[in-house]
Length: 477
Length: 95
Image (cartoon, rainbow over all chains, first blue to last red; front, top):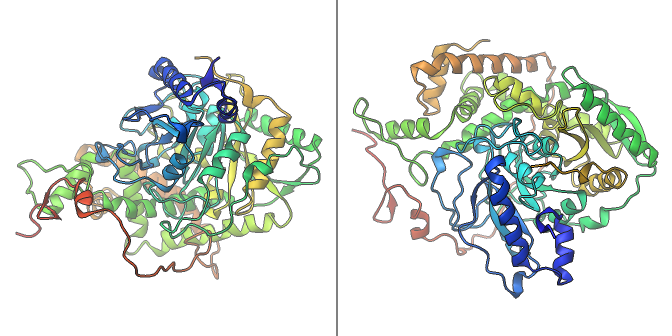
């Protein structure tokens, strides 16, 4: 029996029926990682200690975590030189919830440095590769999480999504990825990128596992002041194969230039599947979404430049001291530490954010970016008055080649064109597999819903999944 | 509006980042491209539009002023690059 190939749900069923043990399942996953990770490079490190399997965690399902989630006593680095060697003194709230549910943490997964990227190439550990084609990127920034789940190196994983960092890699790797509503999942212990946009969410092999993992990680947390205190439903109750009468909005702005014809075709065929299941598809207009990427790269970098100011070589992480040429005052040390510790993309984003917030440019950039954000949110609010979900492609293309976009940051940023509006508006959005290109690379379908209506996303995606077989395909490694 | 090399050096200094001479052209080009792209926001009519800083409206979150267990001084300093007498130690601040 290939335990590593199973969904978390299937594994849980076997554990409960006594047909396998948590230890056996864990060892099967580790053995598979040892076999395929030299090719995929999804993991940056395995947990320093093997879980102690006992009565408390007899139903433990192994899980992988993105390298920006704090686990007590374990190294957490955001794939950056500036944090190498840092061991967290506490558990992130989601990690505590995973541990309380009996979950076994396998290890830590690669990402773009500080989640700055859409390809997993800006990591200080080097890139992760797409399990469907090792010449291609897995997407990013949660590229390690998506590649690991697609390659059966983890039954499921957690990532974080600031502008598409769960959904775009999920699409590129042919798995399911959900960005919850802002405030649904506590961000305590998630190393911040852009605090008003970041959310932690599941990357899973199917929609059922997505609902199960949401049940574990959701909920109010007094340690995250932006966490929202509304009841958490049982998300598995939303797994019904029925979309009769539901209204699906298709933004006319979604079919833009730069959308690959095969992606467009796959999305249109998906709509036919949902139509046949009884949903009504109608056009909606989101006139300000063409400005979303521009607004995002102001707001997100401004927040990032402020959040990353804390990495200064004093309280934790790297400290670098300048050589003999310059002096060694506190400011010299800051500058040397940050210059050696951050990679180029982190420096670009910090500088862009600093520029947007600097005196004389604040109104023209930052304030205008926030106002554009309001317009984009209003468009979505208006559209949801008359539809239950909005569907778009997750990304305009399938996975691109390693190195293809690394020297052109702007073209990299545009790969998040469909995913960014949900972060700006704070609404939940999911990516589910919906086809393949003729080069054998997966295509993702994005569904968005109103704030705190993850159940609607799960219901429609589950129905889609029940009527298609894309989620069952696996890469050959 | 375009970004010049001296702008990049100025921003880098504000952000406490040193941009070496050989990387200045590259960073200037990248940042100029991105700033040019975001210029499209100037087309929008934002009169009477309120800025959104958080998508989900939340006010100030208060809690009772009660001391609860948290990281000890030793745990907090455990990650410090340099510590002395229960405090973080830094290089010379002023000469």
